[in-house]
Amino acid sequence: MKGNLLIIDDEKHLTDNLQMLFSRYSDKVFVANNGTDGLAILENEAIHCVICDIYMPELSGIEVIKKTREDGNKVPFIFFTAYGEDELRGKVANYEQTLFLLKPDISSIVKIIESMLKLGMSSPT
Image (cartoon, rainbow, N blue to C red; front, side, top):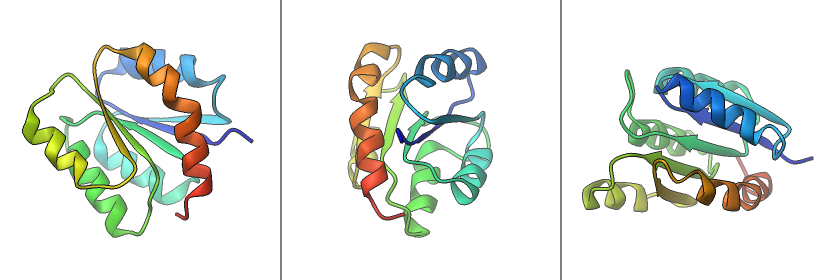
């Protein structure tokens, strides 16, 4: 078992490409195009790693992880965003099991996705 991945991003072309790319690294790849839909998937599916944008419609990535952690879910998050401000990095650093990567650095995500999925499978949800 490789684990299940959730991609939350409002850029459909990016989620389509990431879904295709990561299908070989995970058992199942779920996609949500906003934070609200992402939370619903997190509440209803066994997710072992999340790749999440920060600025999105409805709920931001920070709001998604805040709610996820409040629910007791420690799933690893990879924040994949075009915005690298120190303030955002600081907000993300407040949560355990998170990484912050700048778009469009796909190669960095490819290098770490398997280890993050394994981490998520070993973490209590």
